[in-house]
Length: 419
Image 1: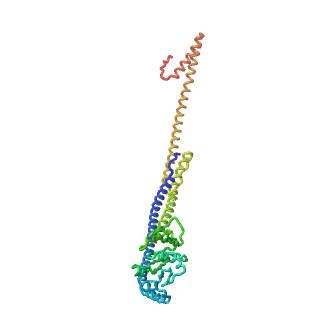
Image 2: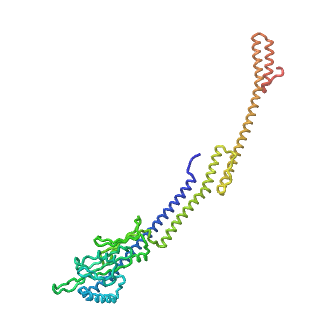
Image 3: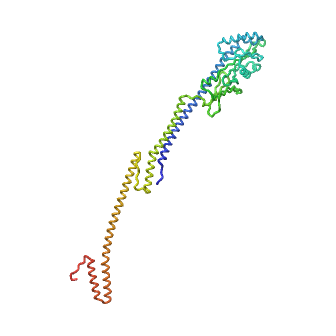
């Protein structure tokens, strides 16, 4: 049997190509959706940093407003110039009333006055011990930076994931009549803070995030790590804090960011489609194998068996109408072929028998002719011998009988009655 392309293999190949094409299309669409989701997550991270920056800017603005109010207030100057403890107490009470009546939100604010001996006077909301330690680390020595006006950030080590502290400070100066210039008598330190943890929760960032507050020279970096673990799929964003030389950066594990419902639904639909397509294509392969490949292989196998030694065998009825019609036509063709073969054999047998009868008749005729000729030749031989021996009587007898035999063998010879 000549080996050629397998129908089963072709069916499997065609279905495989179709499945691969569909899966590739679904893969690219899935990648497109994933890209949209990643872009959407990046927008969320960027938006988070913008909100933090806006919050920090608002806190700085409030702190600067309070700072200007403090350093330009005569009660503050009197407070720093006074050495009397009682007088300072009265001036401090006036300062508190002045601050509370300023209309500025001071609920999350600490106001500190520092004199030239580096002594801190807590005017409003005395900081906790942890906050005091961080303030001492953050604010430079007053004797080394008389006229510095700067903004710094810190977090409290006891609770590093909740509040960002904004520390602004500026010198408090008076006019020096001796030197005809300005003289520093102390420094106003304003500490403001906001709850960064609450802002993260409001934006759906529950864990897997690192926030960095980085100073201009990158000599001071504040790290706020909220349940973050390194992964190969994280998003990075950076934002300059307006009004300062600091910047804030965020590193977020992409898996922890809440996805948009629509994109998540589309991704789920794609995965479901892939599964359904795979199942349908497998079912199609099985169906085509059973309805096409298997009947075709059965018919081919039957013809091969019939070619070797299968006369009298016939194809069975098949379920598929087309293949059943093919099988019945093959059966009819085989019936006609076998009938034609039988007719040819019978005709050949009859021709053979007829030829044989004819040959037998001819042989019998030849045999019938051989005996008289043999006898005629024998008589001629006897006549010759008698003549050579001078026996005329024997010669006449032999020749007489020979003439009689000759007349009997030849039909068209005319003989006289006398002879």
